[in-house]
Amino acid sequence: MVPLLDVRRLTKHFESKGGMWRTPTVVKAVDGVDFTVNEGEMFGLVGESGCGKSTTGRCILRLVEPTAGEVWFRGDNILHYSRERMRKARREMQIVFQDPYSSLNPRMRAADIVEEPLVVHKLGSREERRARAAELFELVGLERGHLERYPHEFSGGQRQRIGIARALALNPSLIVADEAVSALDVSIQAQVVQLLLDLQTTFKLTYLFIAHDLRLVEHVCHRVAVMYRGRIVELGDVTSLFANPTHPYTRALLSAIPALDPDARRTRIELDPGSFVLGAPLQEVAAGHWAAV
Amino acid sequence: MSEKTPSEKARSEPAAAPLLEVRHLTVQFGTDGRLPPAVNDVSFFVAPGETLGLVGESGSGKSVTAFSILRLLPPAARIVSGEIRFEGRDLLQLDQRDMQAVRGARISLIFQEPMTALNPVMRAGEQIAEALYVHGHGRAEARRRAVELLDAVHIPDPDRRAREYPHQLSGGMRQRVMIAIALACTPPLVIADEPTTALDVTIQAQILDLLRELQARFNLALLLITHDFGVIAEMADRVAVMHKGRIVEQGAVRQILRAPVDPYTQRLLAAVPGIARAATAPSPAAGKGF
Image (cartoon, rainbow over the protein chains, first blue to last red):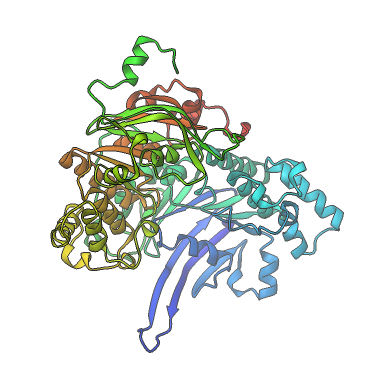
């Protein structure tokens, strides 16, 4: 089976040019990342701040232009697409951002925000687009009567639903959810996660679920990749990876999650950077479970 | 809250003299009474050396409660009624000067965001020393003590770090500096408002370990405000759950986490990914929000 998304040796280096006072530097935000996402899968990408997980998500949509590598989507390397062709391809691949406050234009009404992708892609008449916006609004659990409201009139959870409705407007097959529920209170988070899962069933959506909340990822994803300093250090089925973390970084990361049981035995594992080689190739340590050891 | 069975009463009242006791605190925003109280008839206590977790979602009133204790509320907020007993006095009756002597020296505060809570144009050591000399310590001694405190919060090379500015420190180190400021006068009570929320999980683990260690070393009582039940499970002896300005349930941490009685606490815990009860919880999507 051809995976929906096949990312190969994806690399993004940010270079700052040297000036009179500074030496030029290169930040290897994403440094040779390989993974595939199957149709209908919820694939988690986890790691701590600065590990390159968001840049990876953005490179896949070419919102940030990768330095090197390949991104195969439905059997085509989209990094070779022209600007125009890429714009069309984005009908299939959409993103939901983390911050529901800064990712919606405060001067646009909710209806205009949700139908904007249709306008951009010149789809439907004005009436058809309005009808579609209303349909999407209901789909994500918002009230039709609130379509004419502005973003500030909605709560954080509702705003995130608007962001999801906008992402769904073009019937995409892949949604990059970049910390899409991180900013929400836990009860609201549970509702939005449930919405994402329901929509996945209804529309056979595929998610690249970028998150730092490991417990949440364990709860909702099928497979997960752990990023550390621009590289994937471990990748596998959620069950296998959480039960048998193999890479020293994954072990340290998982041991740092506070246990929800006050009587749980706490064994914090400190990361010893000398215990592994950064950039070692991934090796299969169990069926469908790979680690860079 | 006035009708209590004897067993409930036993659980919600301190065995020994509490360090801090908040009684029937009500805080209102605005003057016309159109808004519901941000804090509504809230009572709890903190015993010496213990950790009370104050947990709730945004807008539940947990931070307003904490800021009321230090009387650091914004001008729009008004304490309508209640008492805040601390070391034998009602903090709400103190004049500004006496209150100033309590802040930082007897009760200190650790904020969530170390980048905005620290002064960006002041060296780390100087910010710690400041906490000491406003409470009457000499400058030279305060500077020397600042370096000791940086060492106590496990910042390597404390002499050098004391001379650095916040932007030169990592997020975890900045939070350590804030903890050092909070500990400068070795107060018996520290209020920590989401002290690890802005941090990565591995850094969070280090900061929680540090707080526990310092708590044992200085016999600190901790009022820990958080929305994270994982942090609660790791740190708290007792827990008070806030919802819409009220404490809906309080008790020992094991009781709250394993057998919550209040329906809101039950729903809140059910929404936490990874809690076994989640399977039996009503579908969160079905609800209209809490």
